[in-house]
Image (tube, rainbow, N blue to C red; front, side, top):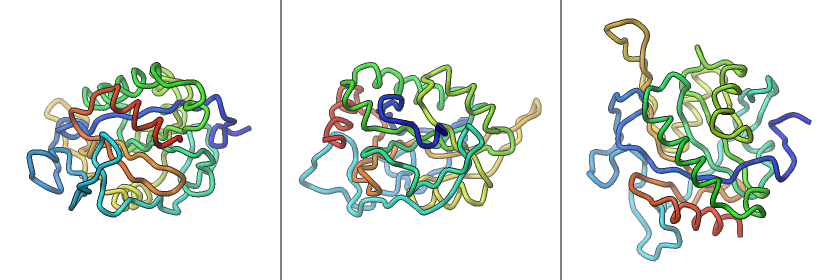
Length: 219
C-alpha cells in the first residue's frame, strides 16, 4: 500500500510550535505582533478556548490540492488524508536550525502520545524547497525523526497555494554569501480534525500541552 494511504498504527500523531523566525533564519511575517512572531494568520482568537494552541476565529479548511508523496505517488490533501487527525508542517531539508527544532519537538511529542491516538493521526511535512527536496530526499530526511512522517513535494506554485490557504507565509530564496540559498517560511503547525483545522500551535507551547491538544483532536 502506498505510504500516502498508510494503515492506522503506522502514522505518528504529533504537533509542534510555531518558531519565531522562518526556516533558514530569514524573517517573513504576515503580522508583526509580538504574540504572533511566525506570521500565522489568526486575525481574532476565540475568547472561550478549547485548545492550548492558538484557535483561529475561522478554522482553516484543507485545500483540494494534489502533491507528490515521498514514495512518488500522488497525494490529494482532501481525499488521501484518511485519518481523523492530520497535522501539517511546512519546511525543507536544508534548513539549518528551525526545521530540525520543530521536527525534534514533533518526535518528542510522538513519544508521549497514547498508541490509540497515534493510530488515528497523520503527520504531513510539506517542503518549501521542491527544487532540492525530491521524494527520495524527503523520505531519507524524515526517517531521522520518525519513519511514519509523510513528506510531500510538488510544484512550487501548488505548494504556495496550499500554504496561502493555511495562513503560512512562504517567501522566495535568499542567496547565501558562500553559495546556496535559504527559503523563508512560517513554521507553525496546523492541526486538522478531518478537513477542518481549529488549532495552530505557536511558539512557546509546551510539549505536554501539544500532546493534550492532539488527544483532544483525536477524541
